[in-house]
Image (cartoon, rainbow, N blue to C red):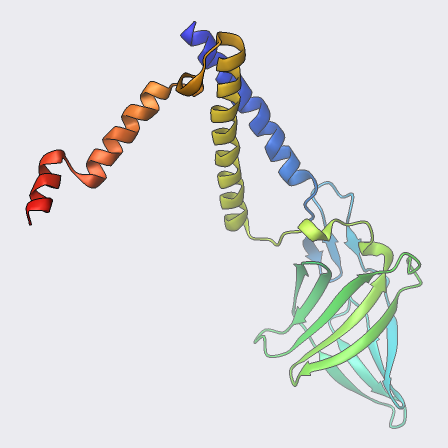
Length: 233
């Protein structure tokens, strides 16, 4: 009887925990940069490919910003003097995923950065992208928004960054919480429905947990002799 009950608990653990882990992962979005202009997902279903984007934005009189994600140079062209200024001559590209997707271009010393914030626009399909809201955040950092349909439909509200360590701990604690919930709640339901247990007897292996509690309390609080000695002081 006891072995059948334990087997039932174990089976419930694995089924519900596996389901919980799948549910935790399925709606989360993450892509990894494969180049300065492409971020790919594991299943290649929601890639962000900025290849072929070649856009300009008028930022002042006779001044335009030229942005090509696959070219390691972003410049501002002065139409009057026919000269250009490098906004970023970058060697590194990173991607930041929060409520939006941001491509971050930096150079070797990380002194200059150019951030391109990708904003969903269903009408801005390939060939119809546009740049807006150019800003000098600091002397060494500029930002611009890129309206594109390439980020539409992505569940960014539950997105995560490339941090394997934090992800591992998140899944570990989520797994432990699910196991504890299934064990105590599911086990109590099984004991009540299948074995007609009531009260404290509904808790699976309640004798073991009570004895464990007493042992921990004795270790932390000491014995009755220690308590008597403390009161005498």
